[in-house]
Length: 118
Image 1 (cartoon, helix red, strand yellow):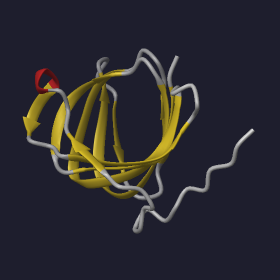
Image 2 (cartoon, rainbow, N blue to C red):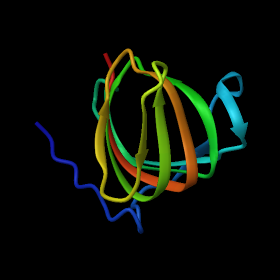
Image 3 (cartoon, one colour):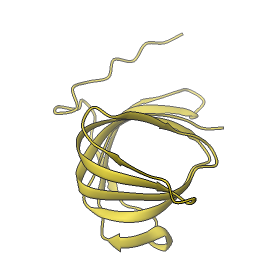
Image 4 (cartoon, helix red, strand yellow):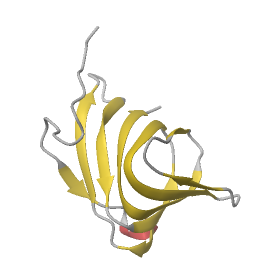
């Protein structure tokens, strides 16, 4: 059994990784992701940390389960069936395996996340 203390998102304790959505999923813009992965389980199937993205939109297809809490910024998440949610600071939500849609960052967005892979 282990314990992992997650830090203040304004002052993460780990070095960030940068990247972006896969080129074949980009719908608009040139979003840049910065990720501070603060926890990874020994089996590599569970993660927690902080993620930030600049504006842009891309297609998302989830194989994993993810819990998110928006810390700053505004994003729109749309399901392939047409439902759309606008999320901002204080909003918390889950995305489950099988979710297919679009993540659109309208204003640079920072979230705390917990991911569980199948």
